[in-house]
Image (cartoon, rainbow, N blue to C red; front, side):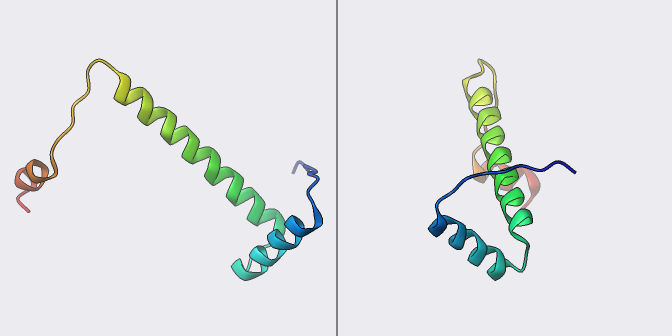
Length: 71
């Protein structure tokens, strides 16, 4: 497994350690989870923006979806 070193102020280190302890995870797991979640969110937003800017895309009103599904 690879290792990564980051430099942060002491107060931020304490904040991260406290959050990790509160979450019941190690600091490494906490940071990895947060970074990967942020990357996934950014990727999802990029895909959504590309879809919205495409010439052809279909959207449906919520009421139409419910009617189609018989809800």
